[in-house]
Amino acid sequence: MSRRTDVTEELTADHRRVERLFAAIGEAPVRAKRRKELADTLTTELMRHSAAEEAYLYPTVRETVPGGDSLADKELADHAGIEGHLRDLEGYDADHERFDALLAVLKAEVAEHVRNEEERLFPRLRRCCSADRLGGLGDDVRRAKRLAGG
Ligand SMILES: [Fe+2]
Image 1 (tube, rainbow, N blue to C red):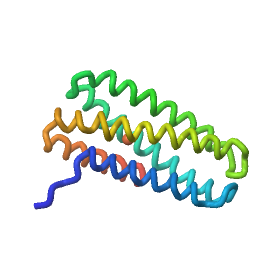
Image 2 (cartoon, rainbow, N blue to C red):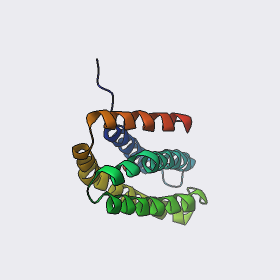
Image 3 (cartoon, helix red, strand yellow):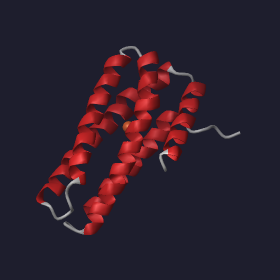
């Protein structure tokens, strides 16, 4: 029987998808409408990812990882920053002077989020949680994303 994808693998796959979207935006011509379309897809993807993490990942981190409360609080603060910039980005077309600057800020914030989780938070969670529980959380995240249209 094949092993189900656990929550850290599921969320890591989201991170790779988001990085590919940033790369695609970077490759699209500057000020092109295509950039805005890709940025809208990026926004949807990131909001869904954040919601799944807030519903399933961070509560488990608080419960199982030593020092988990401060790790989760830091992640929530980072999410709030990213969501604020996504809302700002929504108000601009690709030919607005603020569009590329906001995207650059978001790219740096997301890169920091990805590093924090993949290098610190996920390894700690894997040490503190059973494979069965991590697999169950992976199922929860997949279900949540499906319900959100993913
Ligand atoms: Fe994440």
